[in-house]
Image (tube, rainbow, N blue to C red; front, side, top):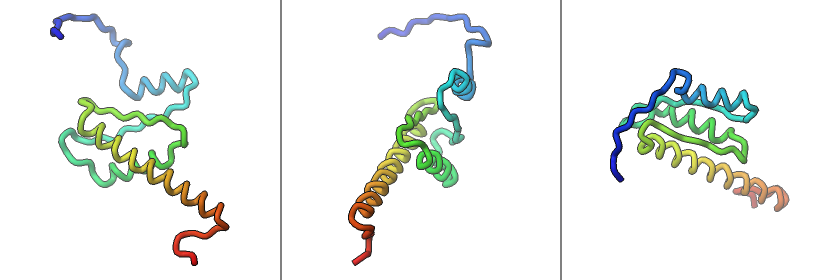
Length: 112
């Protein structure tokens, strides 16, 4: 594709921060939550960033859609998506193990 140089007029009301977009959706009745974890591009997230992400992922409703983005959509977005996916797999596996233990008469790991 060719790069086309074009200018489009934008009024101040046409531009919103991500928080403003989520606030507008909330006003329309959507059950959305916005949170931001500031991580510098090309830097490793801090341990507290992983803790914060982990809290939100593990406490999200089962059917929640989680949306991740950063300015470039590469490093930080991918890191958050992978961590969230691993935490969701762990959360589901724990729930399955718990359900299996309840179905088996309450015998958990190490019981015998």
